[in-house]
Length: 144
Image (tube, rainbow, N blue to C red):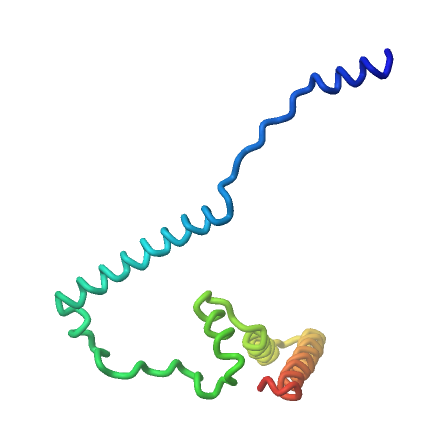
C-alpha cells in the first residue's frame, strides 16, 4: 500500500462531532439568574414574615445578637475558621487532643495493671508534648 492510499484512508475517517458548550458568558448569565431567583425567594419570605409580624414578635427583635461562647477570647484571625468548623460540626485538632488527653487520664485512673498504666502514661506524655508544641507554635507565630 502506497503513501497516497494511506492518506486517503486517513481522510476517510470523519472527526467526532464537537459537543458545544455554552460560552463562559452564557454560563455566567445562567448562574447569575439562578442566584437572583434565590435572592428574590429569600426576599419574598422575609417580606411575608414582616407583613405577618413574625419578625417583630421574635424574642431577639431589636436586640443585639448574643456573642457566641468564647468569641471574645478567640483571636481575630481564628474566629472565621473556627466558626466554619463549628457550623460543619468539625472539632479543631487542638480540642480533639484535649479530649484524648482527658480520656487517657480517665483510663489511667481506672487501670489496675502497672504495665498498662505505664503504657498509658507514655501515650499521655507524648500527647501532652505534641499539644504543648502545637500551642506554643501558635503563640510564637502570633496567632494566639
